[in-house]
Image 1 (cartoon, rainbow, N blue to C red):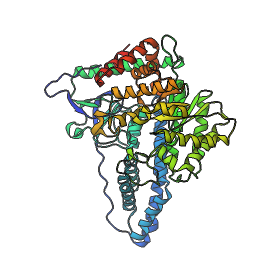
Image 2: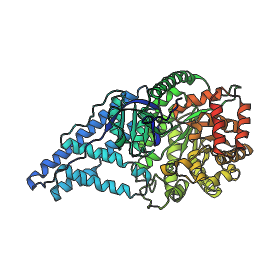
Image 3: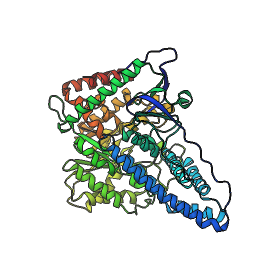
Image 4: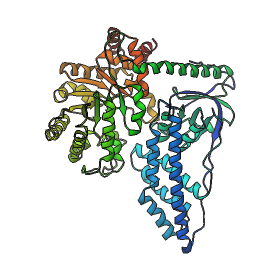
Length: 584
């Protein structure tokens, strides 16, 4: 693709974390918004109403700005194959702006403490942020930049400050930290890349950068102190590196690589209408993973052969009132209905609420190690009314549709859990005769993979979640940059556990799919098919490249390659095999 020649004073490489894939080369813009200066005065009683009206006005205006940002995002995303997520994140912003408890507390601070509007907003939001910081949930902590963004916009509005920054098209934005709304505004300016000193791989800023197709490298320590606005830099969102003072040769190579990638994407577009199969005709259905309703319209053009993973926990987490299973499920019903329409007569696999870990329910207590705590099936079996409610909701909603409906239970670790969950499933299904729904489990924990043969008699299918399986097998938190080097999905141990699961499913005539990130890796996906995995599910934009690699290989070759991988002893050996398969 390109090579970095070491030269004195040039091609200095800064290592960060790859957050959104892509390459960029161009002039950088140091984005360093000035810190806010709050009003220090106290108001008198006659000014309370005036300050409260200022806050109400700011809330309305910022909500209108948020709607405008959503429109700008939609316009930018119209032809972007990674689009669809940012609208849901902006919806979260709107929900915060409408939060009656938050608004009431701001007004109360103005009324009782005689604080001016900007200070009242700052203090109430500060308390909110502090609660998120000590929540023990990574997901909640990663919402903090969004809360800070909303707070800054409200205070800026009250203080009559402009939010939009002037940057040139093709600029690479370099900053200490960046908020989601700022990314969307920069996307409107057609920036070509983003670099930040702080952030998280699953933060909203990171998700929006991916959805907008902007190369993003984060956790690049000290970068803002070592570049100046107007200097050329190179950003590699695949490797997670930033190159300052690049040579002309390097810039030319990177731009050639970008041009070649565009040509490749256009070729891949033609594959949408072609079936997913090997060159010898062996079919491997490629399905899509879905989490948000906003994604549905945008995945249609990739022609997925069903929905292999429909995540539902967003509906659980949004209100936090579900402990007893008594909640309004209108949004979830609509999501299920639209997903069933997308699936048509193909598969629709709904994963039951996969909460816990970094997605803590409101009724749980803080845990020292939530990844090894109360999560997945453990919550569902302890809160059985919640399990029954969701099963009823799924069955009733999908009854009129022709899709092949499936339900799967997350994070099982032993046979007993499967038996108990199956009992609940069968009991609920008995009350809704005439609608066949398959029952399955996620294989995400080493014990479940090792016990797959014992689990198989109680299920209709299994789906391997390679993300969590890798995390648990290798004892490497996939969201922790300090151990990211240990998180290796290509590790031989992962392949051996997949093989054990494949053999168990073959023996018991149970269908098997993979829905983790490994399925989105073209080389790994092809080898999974050779190992005996029947279908694969991934983010829609990954379908063309996976389809392309499948269609270039025979099943016999992939089976032989799978056997070769099972004999590997190192990650490097496996990586080389996967590269060879993908490079055809």
